[in-house]
Image (cartoon, rainbow, N blue to C red; front, side, top):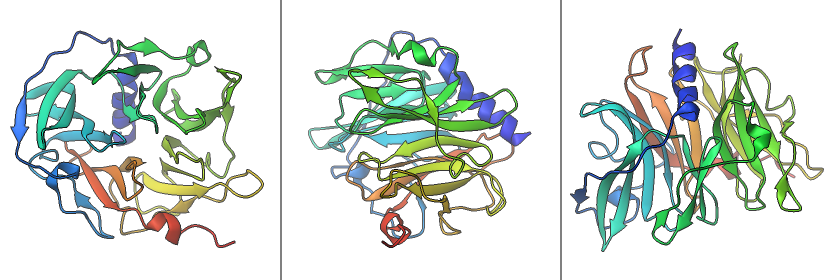
Length: 290
């Protein structure tokens, strides 16, 4: 039942209707990068305890390339519904503001000019963002939970299916238009695979999946692009990152230093999802030797 609950919950974000933004400003004296937090080592730690991570639901944290804005989703406590929020560094102080009710799972393009929200997106407009727009009609009949993009503009995204499974696709940008989505290889789509993160240079992809070699529920895996363009066998990120709990929706910070991901810290109702971060040196440690 827990898989059904979390995947239905995540899929609903695609169907949400955007409404005008409003703001509730909260200022923090954290005048250093990453909300003033001491960087983690090889063991994952909750990100910004009491500030971002609480006993409630915090999901899908991403930074802008300049590390001055941090976007994620809250639910619980004073937030009776899923809420899209941001921490912004203004004059060396971090300010938390509510953007809107939940619209989609945020991902910011490597150049910082586009925020993808599943099948929707916004474009950077000065210091803010444009209205929410729909992506290409090629996604019309697909239920996309998370979409990420490489520096070349190639989309990597998942499709949630009615039987509670899912697969990861890609769509290249060719002559200014995205091609019809294609499935990635079975090395990645072995079982249900979700929430891809593609490296800006497309040298690796991180995703979550529940497999026989896992540690319990959904685990995080990495696959590397090989010389011939194919993908390596997916590698489990190991028991320092994965646990018996649900781990999912990973992303690497724009500077390549840290992995952010989510872990279920509550019951099967997923009322307490936390954002964790960990040193990303495993990316090179696990990379197949040439």
